[in-house]
Image 1 (cartoon, rainbow, N blue to C red):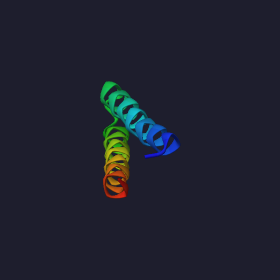
Image 2 (image 1 turned 60 degrees about the vertical axis):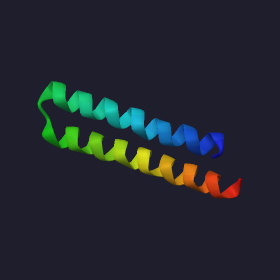
Image 3 (image 1 turned 90 degrees about the vertical axis):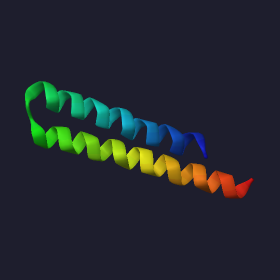
Length: 57
């Protein structure tokens, strides 16, 4: 996995966690859901990249 893609994926996870926490603190269910979705996106992309790395080596 390239450093750029790994950093981007981790960024999605962190940004999603921040949105989820903010949504929870403000009682904003929509922001909370968007945060969870963004975390899932980052984790999914990271898993795909790890799978690609497994087959490359």
